[in-house]
Amino acid sequence: MVVGDFPIELDTLVVGAGPGGYVAAIRAAQEGQNVTIVDKGNLGGVCLNVGCIPSKALIQAGHRYEHAQGADDMGIQTENVSIDFSKTQEWKGQVVNKLTGGVESLLKGNKVDIVKGEVYFVDKNTVKVMDEKNSQTYTFNNCIIGTGSRPIELPNFKYSDRVINSTGALNLSEIPEKMVVIGGGYIGTELGTAYANFGTEVTILEGQEDILLGFEKQMRQLVKKKLKKKGVNVVTNAMAQGVEEKEDGVTVTYEAKGESQTIDADYVLVTVGRKPNTDELGLEQVGVEMSDKGLIQIDKQCRTNIDNIYAIGDIVDGPPLAHKASYEGKIAAEAISGHASEIDYLGIPAVVFSEPELATVGHTEESAKEAGFDVKAAKFPFAANGRALSLNETEGFLKLVTRKEDGVVLGGQIAGANASDMIAEVGLAIESGMTAEDLALTIHAHPSLGEITMEAAEVALGKPIHTV
Image (cartoon, rainbow, N blue to C red; front, side, top):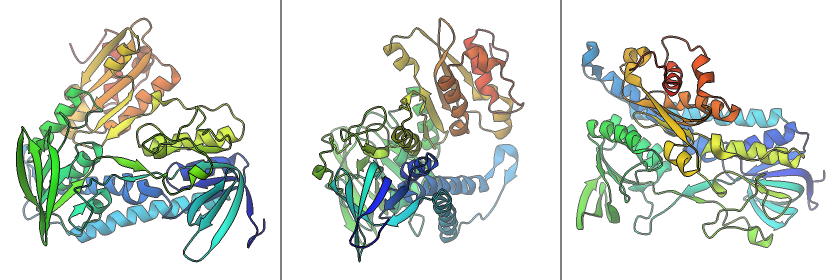
């Protein structure tokens, strides 16, 4: 390996160090490949730095603050609860730093070389990596691209100090009195809920007929009920038209029910989706096939039309989920090593850290029927579970979707406390080809929320114990 005017030769180059890229790099190294990973930003990508992790930290802080207000039904009363938001942000930063530092240690521990800079493809085996001072050429046998995505900017809502995206919302120096959120998807709902818990007056403007349309109606209804209780105003079929910025706030104009309306706020948060980071890599030099939305086309091993170049994460089709990117990263790294690994998205869960939490994996009842299955949907309510009662978290349910002929688990949906953790058992059942009987025969600790999965399986078998 020679550094200077000569190219550095690699087995595998990984472009992007997010949850897809760094996982791909580690797995490739474990498979015996000589690996270098390149990113122009911080290790961990959007997820660890300005996405999944800091948002969940802020959401948790919001929960703590809300809970500190007291619980009259439990006999808990408090007075003069206050928050030092600068300390909240400091703590959130510590969480991020621990994880990004951990990623660096993991990469180095697996002998992956870490390079900081921007990547530009010269041809199918060559890139130039540039930083502020230098340019270095790398040649590779294989490359895995995992450059992630960025927030979509609306033409009439250019980002500024008062018009912010999710990154800006996570880094506010103060708790706003009022905030408008454009977009009722998972990001808008999560951050809107977090700030509502801090006491912000939140309005969510959603252009479609409902928020969180990726989830079943009954699940969405539970979230909207909780949002209303927090004072969040959800306006659906509302089209954001423009914003007037002032020194200390904004006035947002939107159309709803055929009328133009305005609302004043301290900030307007735009969460209308994300755009793949594929436009500044020079992929046209290589001939990598992309969709009109900038998504890279891949096969079942994450291979592009260029046989030694792979793509994973937000830059390929599918939901922009960190765990999807990590999963694809392992597939790509293993494919390079000659394994028969292929992607199968059925077992990938989707979670919203709303109130209550929503989680889904595999088929819904509707999608299973559309796929030609004869199915049974079995539900069990959180309100009939002892642990949920003792947590005072009785809203919600678990629905298990099974095949009628043999009870094989095809999917599951959970709305309720800790749904994000509970969904893993249903995912395991799908991946393993388990039946409702397998879940029912698994002894679950009592009292625990996990028992709800067992109870739903017993409903599927027609032999429920704790519901009639």
